[in-house]
Image (cartoon, rainbow over the protein chains, first blue to last red):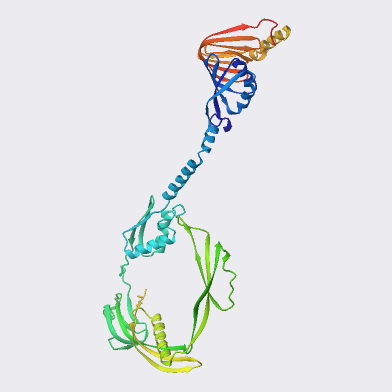
Length: 393
Length: 99
């Protein structure tokens, strides 16, 4: 049906000149042509409009009726389409520019975070980055601001509230930091107990009543300060304080006498491959085969186009020749090394504020190619541990 | 076309109340004021100029005179005429000359 709309049909306006135009027209019409807008120009010339599919019929009969046909103009979609076909580069440019405008308009250009400290701002930005929201990425595939807001609040606990607004090509965030109140409205009654055995060196109880003194040796679980300000009053506050104590640790360390090291001698061979998805096709250097024990490093280079990662990657597989080197350090050296290891492994297990005051080698021996050390460390650390009191309810 | 056939058709169209142009192969001319004329059942265009148009039908010819005549559309048996119409004349075909 739509094909018969006048817009979709091509029409030709022609001038017909000749002696017997009327009979020519009659013949054409009886062959099924449709003539329209017929107008007399002068005694022997008529102007008319025909459909494009009728043209062959007109051509067939014009000689017989001694008519001459002259084109005046064409109109309709088929002619327009044909004319546009010749202007391919123009259309290509139009499509390209539309695409470019579309891409640019849908690219995120800036992210503004307001109202947050630099640390939190960086955290927010890196979170946004992990959601795929960063300058230069396309905003079509991005989550809705509301969703982003929800995710941000979930993933960054320090945020009390964050407003996420997408304005054109920029993201605007306004955050409010969660302020952690030190004191809950109803203070929880608590005591301070020792978390470890040790000798108290320094004590500062900011809230509560201390029960021990400096230089006291306390066992684990001993109460150091109480939140009950008056004895037997039954009224508790939350005891807060710091109790630094000297604690002792025994550390046993095995250190092999011989140190084995693998070294590369610098000779390497690289195999290049093209990877698409999970399939990797070697391209260059795959004929080189090394039988020796090698260390292999794989590195994949990815390509990005307008923030999109292309599925094609180039892989470098580099094999390094290994050389084993056995080292026999001196006894002094290995003891020193073992001490260092011991210190480090102890500090890893302790709190950040712990400090090693002194270290002593209790025992030192060599057993089956290993240096065995038993060490004693003297450490100063905070042993205060808050223990809440249930007030019998 | 014999005479009794014509008479039969005439009688049928009257008896059954059928439109005369269907039964009798006559042209139907519809005019809208004096600006449009819609002619059906015509068999041929004999002459066209901007002041006169002559059309043949099965029983003769008709001539429409006017000013600035244009054919808006021309189909096999239909013609849509535009312009300022002045007169419509029926010219009967002399007997025996027909198709």
